[in-house]
Length: 343
Image (cartoon, rainbow, N blue to C red; front, side):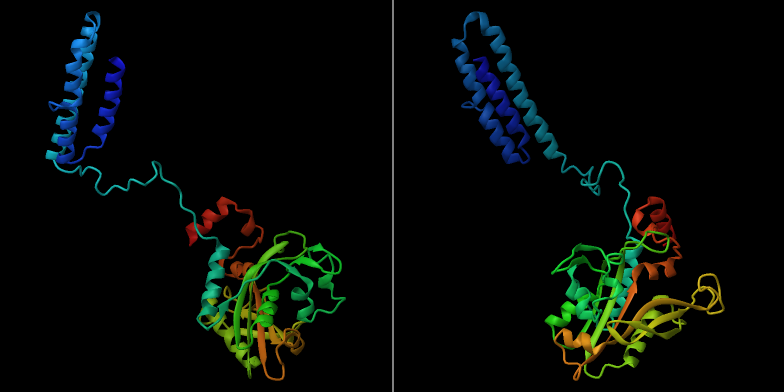
């Protein structure tokens, strides 16, 4: 009998937690307290309890009946008083203690701004693998077999031999992949991380981030390249920014140039940032070499194009005056909090 009462008590407690409407309260009352309910049934069997146990069993049955009545009365009062509005407006999913929110990394901010500017000119984003083969990183881009970039002192090779595998040294490998698989017109920007075998210092790192651009179509000229880069410079650094293009050399472009912008600190008068020249270098560019077009299956007699590339860290240094490249990858919270406060 005691086991039966204990089992019924567990069932009663469980059912009590499920009540929320007047109908459910009535069903609960009928199940446990009506003439044919579970508790009256216990009372009917009470006569069969041995005399020495009647007092104990009777008390247990009375306690169970009182518990059932209390559950019914409590729920009726709660329903009568209306819904509980004490928690209205409180986010119950909120953590018990405030959690500090992070912020976007300065390199992510600069990357997004660069992509936004070129996106407004119709460039789309293309991405590719960081672990590449020799063809896409060097051979297709007109690098001579004895070019210094192919040396292990300049490039991280994963496997040397018949099929060289390496960490890409520039995102130009993405451009060759796109040229191999798409016919012009092609207008893309290629953001990503690149790797070079350099000693880590305040001005250099073994990995950094680039955004390179490529436009190939009929009758593309150097004047088109200059206008695109002028628009980019003024959007990124301000409407008064001036640019100049200096002749340079890159294996995959001909003619090639390096682009400087007027120093945003001194306005071209000369300061420590521009080393007194009034100009600051930000990127390299040029017209795509016909050999590169030919290697990727594009007829250089029909199509021409230009390419450019810049380091995101370089642009971030100019915008935010960060003098040590290592700060971008060390995740020093003091540096990130300072940036957060300033921006």
